[in-house]
Image (cartoon, rainbow, N blue to C red; front, side, top):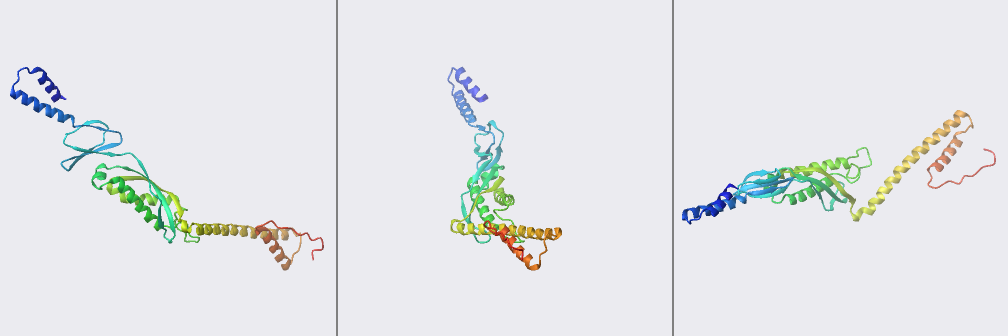
Length: 270
């Protein structure tokens, strides 16, 4: 600013053309004009990475109008939080079943110098490494938990644990590029089309078996309670054969898929 004011003063005040003053005016004008090139604007949540002749000299993160040496080369890096949703990829889980899976990753640049100098394109790096971590995660765990005492973490039944594992895996890959992963979670999870129908039947069969187990367990308890109550109240004396017949009839009534049709015996008990 001072050089600009001096140049304007010389241009308007100097009446006699003198070569030395002309050269001085030209030099000061060039210096003043080049000084204006050093001004730059930093927006909120934005950083300017500056280099001089290929050497890193610093990063400016303070928002507002700034000035630096005009020879500095400045590159803008956004520090805002971003969302990335991967494409649906097909991969085999740890049991060999083909599945389709996709994820959402919430990330931001925390070290602008590493994001610029450690990788060629940090946005592309986020995309590729996130999908790589998602593939490894999907192949490490099963789609559904096993139906035994050794049940383990599964993709479908343990969303919180899977999300933590995914975020940790992605962060290990992106940390070297100055990127922080704030959240990662699965957005799409399904069996591949070629086995979806068979796996649906398997899930239905598992649900039916589980429901039958609960029904039989409840029916046995009700039969046991009925026999105990009849014995305690001394309503009727039943021999072993009659007890077996009663248990069979009650189990048929309680465990049947359809409503039973009762038959009333109007004759004697025996």
